[in-house]
Amino acid sequence: MPSDGTNDGTVVHECRILKIGTRARDRPLVNGVVVEYDSSPVGEVPETAAGKSGTFTATLAAGHYAIICNLVGHVAQGMVTDFTVN
Image 1 (tube, rainbow, N blue to C red):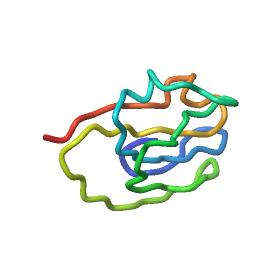
Image 2 (spheres, one colour; image 1 turned 45 degrees about the vertical axis):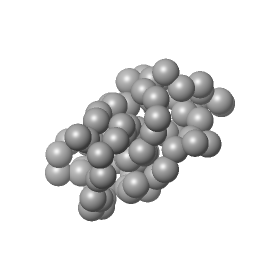
Image 3 (tube, one colour; image 1 turned 120 degrees about the horizontal axis):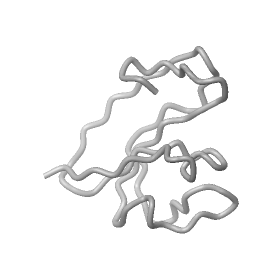
Image 4 (cartoon, one colour; image 1 turned 180 degrees about the vertical axis):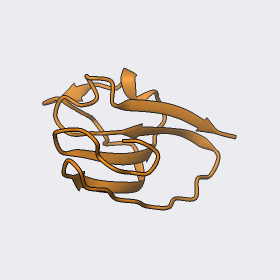
């Protein structure tokens, strides 16, 4: 999604921020989604249809995080970004 939060694609997407101990790309996929068993969800824009938008605000403490679209197959297509807050 672009920075304004609009889903400019043609399929449903979601945007989740997870506080996570390892890179999201390195985590196992089960049925096409990232395993979240030991992560802490910080915020989420739930499933958003094409052309629709959503927002959320999160205050992030120091640590490692991932922004993912954890719908089936989307992480494998590159819809994931890892980052660290110092």
